[in-house]
Image 1 (cartoon, one colour):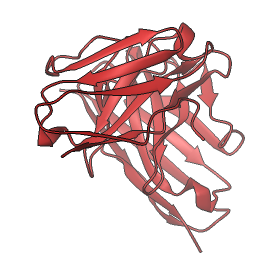
Image 2 (cartoon, one colour):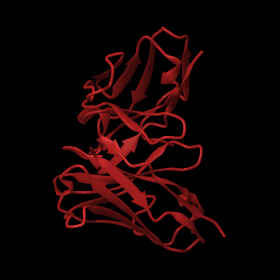
Image 3 (cartoon, rainbow over the protein chains, first blue to last red):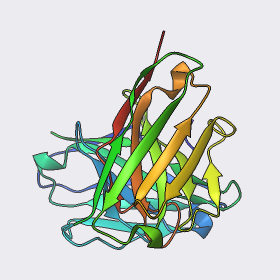
Amino acid sequence: QSVLTQPPSVSAAPGQKVTISCSGSSSNIGNNYVSWYQQLPGTAPKLLIYDNNKRPSGIPDRFSGSKSGTSATLGITGLQTGDEADYYCGTWDSSLSVGVFGGGTKLTVL
Amino acid sequence: EVHLLESGGGLVQPGGSLRLSCAASGFTFSNYAMTWVRQAPGKGLEWVSAIRESGDRTFYADSVKGRFTISRDNSKNTLYLQMNSLRAEDTAVYYCAKSPGRLGLFDFWGQGTLVTVSS
């Protein structure tokens, strides 16, 4: 049981847009920055979004992030088959003094 | 270029011990907190442990507290995870990750090392 809650799977057609939600509490998302990670099959996770809505160098602007209260959202536009991956949200929990992740969302591009 | 290379994984019997290492290069290791994250086969990411830049503060998930010890040698640019009293549920790929500026954020990850706990 993950501290952060994500939908297990989402799907959309190539070229379309998809959003992935991440729900937490005041001790984690509510008072800390959220980051998002992409894990392609058989590879290590890769930072996609940090500080709620910032993109590291090299990440296309098709990927966006937002946060409101105790929830965060990852958005992906112009879906490509290469975007098929597992996506994880993560943050710090100030009450528990531990890092926390969502359970992960598998994106399928139909 | 940042590079993190984990080693030390393998097959160990329940109750046994293992020490993982993570060799870092391409950045000033002593300026960054470091973290271990694991992923059981077919499962999601699980945060395991973190250590501050100087090594003076460490943090652990409840699932490993009292059994695992994180440490670092800034003179060798290396992060460690000493794992004792291993259980079947510790079976996972263990990743080390660099934390820029704050715990809970990981900007670079290693390729991972597999730990299998089985008799």
